[in-house]
Image 1 (cartoon, rainbow, N blue to C red):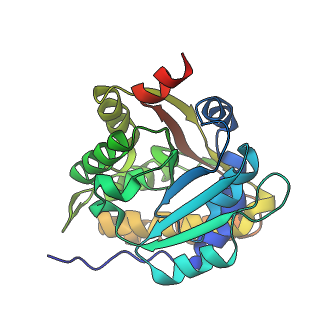
Image 2 (cartoon, rainbow, N blue to C red):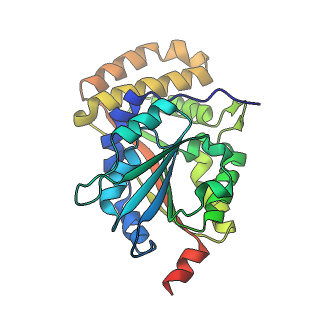
Image 3 (spheres, one colour):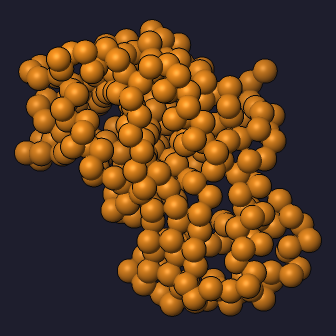
Length: 280
């Protein structure tokens, strides 16, 4: 059965790119650099790449020459990623190869020759079965994997409101909803990924990477809040009537930069046994 892909609007990806860049755990990049091959091109596969924001953030932080292979099932997003390629630390664009593919259907050969696998804002959108398949292909590639910005089920709004907790609970339930592909992992994805990767023999490092959206990112805070409430009301229809005034008031505050939003994410770096042996 072929399922209709979820389309992520490019304007949403553009809006969040700077917040993602500020949130990602730079400490893990320092660890990662020690596990990449010295000399020659470093081949990086970016899964569900969207418009290529992960490459634009990571490429200047990695040493040596790089070649990026970007995967996405949305041809328009792939075209956007190719049009704005990553740049190395010296500002020179790096080579980019695009692959129009559903990353939940990758086989081990699809990542052959990879020195690094990356993905951003992906794990929480997978089912447990899809995550298991992703772990299998990454393990077969025997290279480091850096997964950033997976939601962890923590949202904090300042100033607080009594309805925040109910909306947050309904949103988390929506993140874990049943779909034609199976039940999504949502906030359970990081723990499931750590367990699966360690079972496969990888060393896994996890660091927090929260968004903090204040006045300087009011547009993103407002867009995020709108989607947060809509998903919660879809999950709990009784919440829609109760939250109407709440949503209007909070959205106005977000647009005016008076609502501070903290959204919990986590980044994880997986180092497989083959990579660790290479350093000894």
